[in-house]
Length: 154
Image (cartoon, rainbow, N blue to C red):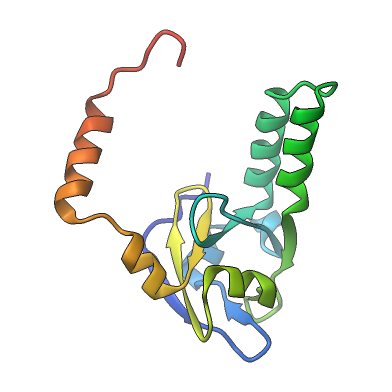
């Protein structure tokens, strides 16, 4: 499994193309270095880029939790996958981020790639900095999560 960590700033060109950081591209499985799956994050002002294998596992896990005969579940599935797009990685290591998505996250000339272990997020740098917790808040929340014991149902 790829482990995307850290962050890297990248400049967008006039068409919305951006270099995927080379450290992240190198972590992609050999068979998955030509495209990624992108979807807008439903809770944060960022785009999430998935290696194809990770995306396929996420969709399969999600689909298993749904009832194919429940209209609400079907609408969730449709919206989840219809908000996703394939991004081809060109020979130079760039992807084209659609302008409508860049506008939704407030990005104009540069973005910040942020590692999320099995996927990566693309943020407007200022928006990412604003969304970050203070050191004290982060330490408090991290401690609470790390001390949480898994329940029998987890």
